[in-house]
Amino acid sequence: MSIDPQTAQAPLGITPSQTIGPFFAYALTPRAYGGSELATGTVAAEGVAGERIRIVGTVYDGDGAPVGDAMLETWQADAQGRYNAAGNAGFTGFGRIEATAEGTFQIETIRPGPVAAPDGTMQAPHLSLSVFARGLLTRLTTRIYFEGEAANAADPVLALVPAERRHTLIATSQPDGSFRFDVHLQGENETVFFAS
Image 1: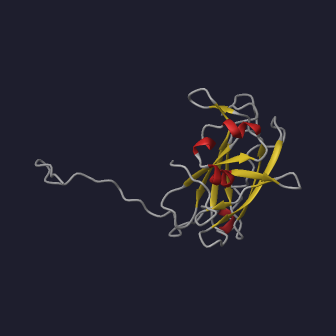
Image 2 (image 1 turned 30 degrees about the vertical axis):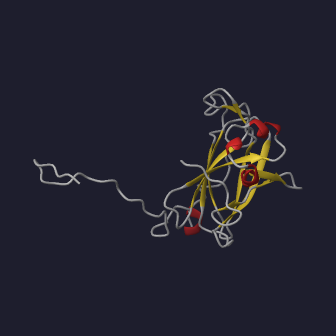
Protein backbone atom coordinates (compact mmCIF):
# COMPACT_ATOMS: atom_id res chain seq x y z
CA MET A 1 0.00 0.00 0.00
CA SER A 2 1.37 3.43 -0.87
CA ILE A 3 0.95 6.50 1.30
CA ASP A 4 0.31 9.94 -0.14
CA PRO A 5 3.36 12.00 0.98
CA GLN A 6 1.36 15.26 1.08
CA THR A 7 -1.36 14.01 3.40
CA ALA A 8 0.53 11.15 5.08
CA GLN A 9 -2.61 9.05 4.74
CA ALA A 10 -3.20 5.75 3.05
CA PRO A 11 -5.73 5.88 0.21
CA LEU A 12 -9.21 4.66 1.00
CA GLY A 13 -9.80 1.06 0.07
CA ILE A 14 -12.88 -0.75 -1.05
CA THR A 15 -15.61 -0.92 1.56
CA PRO A 16 -16.08 -4.57 2.53
CA SER A 17 -19.39 -6.30 1.90
CA GLN A 18 -21.80 -6.78 4.77
CA THR A 19 -24.56 -9.31 5.02
CA ILE A 20 -28.06 -8.09 4.17
CA GLY A 21 -29.33 -8.94 7.62
CA PRO A 22 -30.74 -9.71 10.11
CA PHE A 23 -28.84 -6.90 11.83
CA PHE A 24 -31.42 -4.22 11.08
CA ALA A 25 -34.21 -5.50 8.88
CA TYR A 26 -36.92 -3.14 10.11
CA ALA A 27 -39.21 -2.13 7.24
CA LEU A 28 -37.46 -4.41 4.78
CA THR A 29 -40.68 -6.39 4.93
CA PRO A 30 -43.16 -3.86 6.39
CA ARG A 31 -45.93 -6.39 7.04
CA ALA A 32 -43.71 -8.21 9.55
CA TYR A 33 -43.59 -5.05 11.67
CA GLY A 34 -47.25 -4.07 11.46
CA GLY A 35 -46.68 -1.66 8.58
CA SER A 36 -48.67 -1.23 5.42
CA GLU A 37 -48.26 -3.72 2.65
CA LEU A 38 -46.01 -1.74 0.35
CA ALA A 39 -44.75 -4.99 -1.10
CA THR A 40 -48.06 -6.42 -2.25
CA GLY A 41 -46.80 -8.51 -5.16
CA THR A 42 -49.03 -6.77 -7.71
CA VAL A 43 -46.85 -5.80 -10.67
CA ALA A 44 -49.68 -5.14 -13.12
CA ALA A 45 -52.92 -3.55 -11.96
CA GLU A 46 -56.30 -4.73 -13.24
CA GLY A 47 -56.94 -3.40 -16.74
CA VAL A 48 -53.33 -3.55 -17.96
CA ALA A 49 -53.20 -5.08 -21.44
CA GLY A 50 -52.00 -8.68 -21.48
CA GLU A 51 -52.75 -12.14 -20.15
CA ARG A 52 -53.03 -11.99 -16.36
CA ILE A 53 -50.90 -14.57 -14.55
CA ARG A 54 -50.11 -15.49 -10.97
CA ILE A 55 -46.78 -16.94 -9.88
CA VAL A 56 -46.62 -18.63 -6.47
CA GLY A 57 -43.63 -20.09 -4.71
CA THR A 58 -41.56 -20.54 -1.58
CA VAL A 59 -38.05 -19.36 -0.72
CA TYR A 60 -35.97 -22.14 0.88
CA ASP A 61 -32.58 -21.99 2.61
CA GLY A 62 -29.79 -24.53 2.16
CA ASP A 63 -31.36 -26.89 4.70
CA GLY A 64 -34.72 -26.85 2.91
CA ALA A 65 -36.37 -24.65 5.55
CA PRO A 66 -38.61 -21.79 4.40
CA VAL A 67 -37.10 -18.29 4.62
CA GLY A 68 -39.81 -16.18 6.23
CA ASP A 69 -38.08 -12.82 6.00
CA ALA A 70 -37.04 -12.79 2.35
CA MET A 71 -37.88 -9.94 0.02
CA LEU A 72 -38.08 -10.32 -3.74
CA GLU A 73 -38.03 -7.74 -6.52
CA THR A 74 -39.16 -8.39 -10.07
CA TRP A 75 -38.57 -6.52 -13.31
CA GLN A 76 -40.27 -7.42 -16.56
CA ALA A 77 -41.43 -6.23 -19.96
CA ASP A 78 -45.08 -5.73 -20.85
CA ALA A 79 -47.04 -8.09 -23.12
CA GLN A 80 -45.45 -6.49 -26.20
CA GLY A 81 -41.91 -6.96 -24.86
CA ARG A 82 -41.41 -3.29 -23.94
CA TYR A 83 -39.94 -1.91 -20.74
CA ASN A 84 -41.41 1.35 -19.40
CA ALA A 85 -43.99 1.41 -22.17
CA ALA A 86 -45.71 4.77 -22.51
CA GLY A 87 -49.47 4.57 -22.57
CA ASN A 88 -49.67 1.34 -20.56
CA ALA A 89 -51.23 2.85 -17.44
CA GLY A 90 -51.03 0.72 -14.32
CA PHE A 91 -47.91 -1.13 -15.46
CA THR A 92 -44.45 -0.25 -14.20
CA GLY A 93 -42.73 -3.57 -14.80
CA PHE A 94 -41.38 -3.50 -11.24
CA GLY A 95 -42.65 -5.33 -8.19
CA ARG A 96 -41.56 -5.83 -4.60
CA ILE A 97 -42.83 -8.88 -2.78
CA GLU A 98 -42.27 -9.90 0.82
CA ALA A 99 -42.33 -13.56 1.73
CA THR A 100 -44.80 -14.67 4.39
CA ALA A 101 -43.62 -16.17 7.68
CA GLU A 102 -43.84 -19.53 5.89
CA GLY A 103 -41.52 -18.30 3.11
CA THR A 104 -44.27 -18.18 0.48
CA PHE A 105 -44.78 -15.43 -2.07
CA GLN A 106 -47.20 -14.54 -4.83
CA ILE A 107 -46.71 -12.32 -7.90
CA GLU A 108 -49.76 -10.94 -9.74
CA THR A 109 -48.80 -9.63 -13.17
CA ILE A 110 -49.22 -10.07 -16.90
CA ARG A 111 -47.36 -12.56 -19.03
CA PRO A 112 -44.39 -10.67 -20.50
CA GLY A 113 -43.68 -10.65 -24.21
CA PRO A 114 -40.40 -11.65 -25.87
CA VAL A 115 -37.62 -9.05 -25.52
CA ALA A 116 -34.79 -8.30 -27.95
CA ALA A 117 -31.30 -8.89 -26.55
CA PRO A 118 -28.59 -6.28 -27.25
CA ASP A 119 -27.41 -8.32 -30.25
CA GLY A 120 -30.94 -8.47 -31.68
CA THR A 121 -31.71 -12.09 -30.81
CA MET A 122 -35.02 -12.60 -29.07
CA GLN A 123 -35.20 -13.59 -25.42
CA ALA A 124 -38.07 -15.78 -24.28
CA PRO A 125 -40.72 -14.17 -22.05
CA HIS A 126 -39.31 -13.97 -18.52
CA LEU A 127 -39.23 -12.00 -15.29
CA SER A 128 -35.94 -10.93 -13.72
CA LEU A 129 -35.97 -11.74 -10.01
CA SER A 130 -33.75 -10.43 -7.20
CA VAL A 131 -33.77 -12.13 -3.81
CA PHE A 132 -32.77 -10.39 -0.57
CA ALA A 133 -32.56 -12.48 2.61
CA ARG A 134 -30.72 -12.89 5.88
CA GLY A 135 -27.19 -14.14 5.55
CA LEU A 136 -26.67 -12.97 1.96
CA LEU A 137 -23.80 -10.59 1.23
CA THR A 138 -25.62 -9.18 -1.76
CA ARG A 139 -28.85 -9.81 -3.61
CA LEU A 140 -29.16 -12.93 -5.73
CA THR A 141 -30.39 -12.47 -9.28
CA THR A 142 -32.16 -15.05 -11.40
CA ARG A 143 -34.88 -15.30 -14.04
CA ILE A 144 -38.31 -16.88 -14.19
CA TYR A 145 -39.17 -18.51 -17.52
CA PHE A 146 -42.44 -20.30 -18.28
CA GLU A 147 -43.06 -24.00 -18.86
CA GLY A 148 -44.31 -24.77 -22.35
CA GLU A 149 -42.94 -21.56 -23.90
CA ALA A 150 -41.60 -22.42 -27.37
CA ALA A 151 -39.18 -19.45 -27.29
CA ASN A 152 -37.29 -21.04 -24.35
CA ALA A 153 -35.45 -23.29 -26.82
CA ALA A 154 -33.76 -20.31 -28.50
CA ASP A 155 -33.30 -18.00 -25.50
CA PRO A 156 -29.63 -16.89 -25.43
CA VAL A 157 -29.43 -16.66 -21.62
CA LEU A 158 -31.18 -19.96 -20.94
CA ALA A 159 -28.85 -21.60 -23.48
CA LEU A 160 -25.86 -20.67 -21.28
CA VAL A 161 -27.24 -22.76 -18.41
CA PRO A 162 -26.39 -26.49 -18.47
CA ALA A 163 -29.44 -28.49 -19.62
CA GLU A 164 -29.68 -30.40 -16.33
CA ARG A 165 -29.97 -27.10 -14.37
CA ARG A 166 -32.45 -25.20 -16.58
CA HIS A 167 -35.46 -26.57 -14.72
CA THR A 168 -34.49 -24.34 -11.76
CA LEU A 169 -35.36 -21.31 -13.93
CA ILE A 170 -38.71 -22.52 -15.28
CA ALA A 171 -42.02 -21.87 -13.54
CA THR A 172 -44.31 -24.88 -13.87
CA SER A 173 -47.99 -24.73 -14.80
CA GLN A 174 -50.38 -25.61 -11.97
CA PRO A 175 -53.92 -27.09 -12.20
CA ASP A 176 -55.45 -23.81 -10.97
CA GLY A 177 -53.88 -21.87 -13.86
CA SER A 178 -51.07 -20.33 -11.81
CA PHE A 179 -47.34 -20.97 -12.21
CA ARG A 180 -45.11 -22.37 -9.45
CA PHE A 181 -41.54 -21.12 -9.00
CA ASP A 182 -39.64 -22.05 -5.84
CA VAL A 183 -36.35 -20.37 -4.96
CA HIS A 184 -33.67 -22.58 -3.38
CA LEU A 185 -30.82 -20.47 -2.01
CA GLN A 186 -28.43 -23.44 -1.67
CA GLY A 187 -28.32 -27.19 -1.80
CA GLU A 188 -29.06 -29.91 -4.29
CA ASN A 189 -31.96 -28.02 -5.87
CA GLU A 190 -30.23 -24.61 -5.79
CA THR A 191 -31.75 -22.13 -8.21
CA VAL A 192 -29.34 -20.91 -10.89
CA PHE A 193 -28.27 -17.36 -10.01
CA PHE A 194 -26.54 -14.87 -12.30
CA ALA A 195 -23.86 -12.27 -11.58
CA SER A 196 -25.48 -8.90 -11.02
